[in-house]
Amino acid sequence: MKKFRINRLLFILILVICFGFLICSFRHFKVDKNFSSIPLNFNPSGSISSYVWNGSEVAIKGGFVKGKTIDNRTENLILRSISPTPEISIRANSKGNKTFYLRLENINPVDTNFSNIEKNQVKIIDSHTVALAISLKANEEKTIKAVPKDNTDGFEFVMLGDNRDGYQTFSQILDQINAIDPAFTVDDGDLVFGGEPHKYRLFYESVAKLKVPLYTTLGNHDIRENGRPTYTKLFGPPYYSFDYKNVHLVFLDSSRGFTEKVAIPEEQYKWLENDLKSAKGKLIFVFSHIPPSDPRKYVDANTLPNISDEERPGLIERIMNNYSQYKSLNHGFPDQAEAKRFENIMTKYHVHTVFLSHIHSYFSYIKDNVRYVISGGGGAELLTTNSYYHYLRVKVTNEDTYLEAIELPSPANKIQDRYIAAVQLFAKAIYKEYKTTVISILIIILSIIAWILWNTRNKWERGLLFWVKFLSQVFRTSITIYKQLKEDIFKKR
Image (cartoon, rainbow, N blue to C red):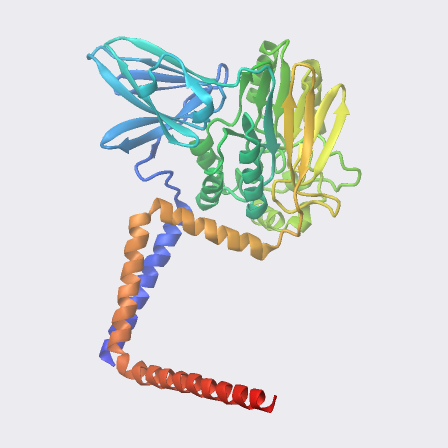
């Protein structure tokens, strides 16, 4: 009896340890085993990020300095690209010759050339990451450019939005994107259902299989539960732009525009106008999660920004967790004056297409000579019975721009399917990040179970022996009856 109590206490203790481990995993997202993040230092005017590393200055245009990692006891600086053509500049200090080890992620290594560096100094890590070993003399400066191998004038990209917790549909879309092999993919916000670290872990784990660069914008769900810092750590600045061939692409942060009166802050508007001025003569695409105006005819007034601070946390959380309660609200900017301002800027600078999400459906319309396309069919609950899951293929040529909505099977987004997919992804991500800990805990649990079974064998050994003999006797009897019936039937014939 005493042994049984000790065993039970040990088993409870290991369950408590496992539960605590899972709670810590929910609250913390470790990008990689040896990864440590670096606070974002990014200037959207020029899309430049810089960092002083061991006395030397490293800068990237069209990307940002993300963090550090240890590989074979050597510190590597991790840079993430937010452009198909990032440029890396390094200025060595005056302390002699040195080799800098960098990792550039979110590119397509197979379809990218690097200038001003030898081929043996470039190593492919995975389908979207390369390692660069750059040797410099004291005070030497070097600039390395990533140049896509595609020399044609046109290109294709894929755009989607509002994948959130529609993991199965989103996974199908990612597989199809890999088959299409576009220049890049844009996810236009609501990457996750809520901004908790474990939910970002699920998204990060999902897109790891994507073989082309991924550029993102912030959605209203992405900043919930203090999700903005996690997004920044993983995907960088909230707004930025880049040029690719004859196109200028702008990525905005309108994530506040559903639960706050101002969708886009004034500082961002000032940057936007200056950025669009500099893009004069180019084909301009703008990406932003929340549309300035809701194109649906019958919508209720959005009262969320008018809720008092005392009511805001509980009430909004309840409303937003129940999609059926808020899907009929106006999904445009809360302030009509701001919506008009945004649309006037798009027209003033001759923007070709504004790509939007937030409404879980598909709309395309022209307003004041600007095309607005709303695509929110990446996996979240569909808005109406006429909506369907989809993503967009956008083909740009010298003559025109072609847009095609690719429809996917659109069964009801059942909550049990989402939870099953979420549990599978979470378990996989936990194992990937804490492999040694998970294996150790499993070994301990199995050892304790084996120990308990061994010490209580007098209680279950006889029962097990009974069932073994019973099933064995049933099996022998069944064979005898089978042979007897077969013999009787064939004899009669």
